[in-house]
Amino acid sequence: MTTADEHREAAPAVVRFSVITVSDSRTVEDDVSGKRIGELALAEGHEVLDREIVADDRLEIRTRLQAVLSDEKVDVVVLNGGTGYSPRDVTTEVVEPLLDTTLHGFGELFRMLSWKQVGAAAMLSRAVAGLIGTRAVFVLPGSPKAVELAMQQLILPEAAHLLSQARKSE
Image (cartoon, rainbow, N blue to C red):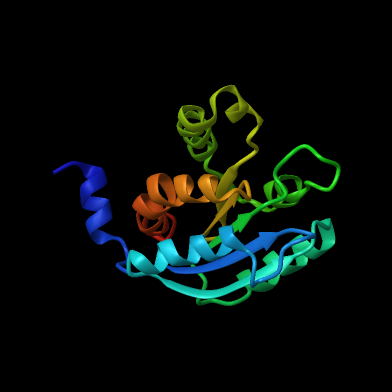
């Protein structure tokens, strides 16, 4: 058994997620990506505490993220949308300065895995992740394929492990 396997065994069995979709055009009813994030987390036995939409606005994104993180029950926040290159795409710029620790490997691996799906367009991804305190925050593109890739291949396999490592000194 590897050290990573030992860490995973000591990690929490259930992780509590909050999902924030950043969009000026989506509603909770037609938010395919946010819904899919929740479905995938639930299918793995985790909890989804809330799922909401916030406009592509710096202050709204920051305010909502901080409000979600004020709930001690939240372990992981997954934001999707607002990661492109249009002037309204500001999610990455809002979240990155709030991170206490950046999980550099997440963005690197996400782009590598995305390359297999979309080719060179993968380099346009501004997916990022890290810790705010002892909570994990992931910023994903808003496409359903992107959120499925990130959740299935990166976030769900390692979120509990990441949290257990971040909380070792608690």
